Length: 412
Image 1: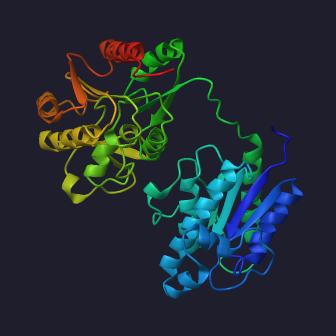
Image 2: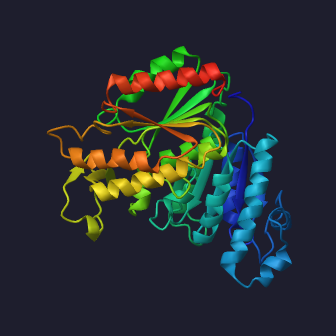
């Protein structure tokens, strides 16, 4: 309920950052919220009273403070504390004892914060106040799908008016998010889908009303790295009744070293959770890079299409496409549930038609042949003489979906 008093978990090193952490608590309490204080310091003792001691944190990580100190390695020490903090935070959320988390730190505290946030499900406010917020040193694969970050400006040492501004902003944002967050309504089964914008892939426009007619919700994830991570994390937890992974282009980015990947676990989540999958190779013939960054030397000389000032794409050679096709087949073949791989032979994204910058019918034919050679059980291969954006593709998806509904493979 919006007016219910919300409790925010505050995590930090209370031996070195007590004044800053206490200021955050004061801000939350002044606005009518409650707090739980968790100490993740190792060497010193907390200045103020805490609700969850460092000893409890260490124990939840399968260790103890003396043992962690004996590591004589601050990196290993923080990893041990991060494990305990993540376990405790999840327990508190599961028991409905807290409704949001705010974590304070420099690089050490941020490392811990990222692990805590990844342990918590989508929908709970996750605020990291860090001296390295938005830094390129933070690997995208370590970011929770709905993490929020505030730069801890002027706060490396001591409490001052500049850092108070950052801390109060983060405190209010966390409490406000906890108050306004709506719990996930699970009254309808959910189909998870990947896609890009409708200038590139259009099947979601055709499929959304049809899937809703069948009593399902459709959740479409933008497959530009973070979206794919969120999609796979939810699939791994068995959230989806069916997966429609039609834009696995993050595999291309992973294989060829772009930062716009979804990490090593992409396309594995649904298979591990026995979730049926309908898969298509949308946009896997492209590699993406940030527009503002020079691409690797191996891609120099290729024509890049700047989608906007954030992302640009280059086409792959036939050999490069085939390598991605093999990688996709290898991943989906590990599934424990039925998989149908639909391959539109005419084209797989909006810029590969005749006259468009990535039109290469010979490379497309080679990719189709690669799928024929690499596809293996439990994957069923379906070839279509159409483009992925044609109505024929959407119709085939629905035919498979309806068949699986009738057979009880998809449950509602």
